Picture (tube, rainbow, N blue to C red):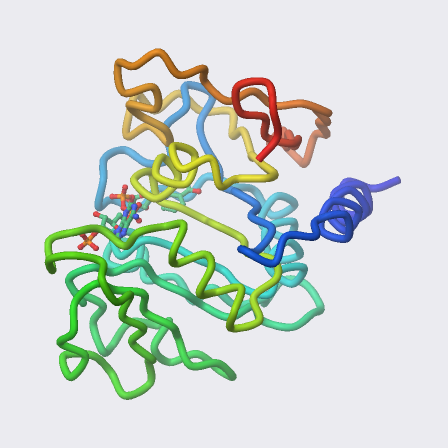
Length: 239
Ligand SMILES: NC(=O)c1ccc[n+]([C@@H]2O[C@H](COP(=O)([O-])OP(=O)(O)OC[C@H]3O[C@@H](n4cnc5c(N)ncnc54)[C@H](OP(=O)(O)O)[C@@H]3O)[C@@H](O)[C@H]2O)c1
């Protein structure tokens, strides 16, 4: 079975077995160097994946209802978040943006068939492009607060997002892991040593929490990259 078939079968099995109506099934996926860096430093773009892993990323996008990134990634990479290197529908683009910094010119605001959802805690929606829908999480506190993830995930589920792919960057990856909201992880390991900005940081926060584990581990080479995937387990239990 090809890598693409293996990952698709595995993911379809996971999402079909996920029955929660409180939030979507959440897949975390990103590319990192062998030393765990996702870029040189925050705000800089570093292209990691070879063509095979890039195709897998687009396939994964097509298998989810929604795709989410942080405003840091929008400002640095200006991603389209569409399915271009695989056959399939585009997922709903979603940005975590507490301060409404998404530029009107951002590619996610000029999506071919979807209006981007900007999740925020700030009410100043007029600052944004008419191509985007600002979704304010009521009661989230002051405009300085980050978007509260459990409430945001509940709202996405209410809006019909049953499966969500989280593509980064590091602050978002770390927040989802801390909140124990990740069900599945698909990681591309690129044969580079960067010594740069790490995908995950301060996960334990100096406390006595157990770090998450990964079970049912699979791996497959994709060109020069290695793709690894598995289920997340938190303190001996899955999410
Ligand atoms: N290799 C890869 O696969 C990959 C993938 C994606 C990105 N990247 C790289 O990662 C870098 C960007 O990462 P980053 O860590 O700087 O930014 P990020 O994770 O993309 O975005 C973080 C920002 O999102 C906002 N946010 C709102 N609610 C949040 C919440 N609950 N948790 C976390 N963040 C929340 C915050 O800004 P506000 O307070 O303003 O809302 C926060 O600063 C770029 O250099 C990009 O190239 C690499």
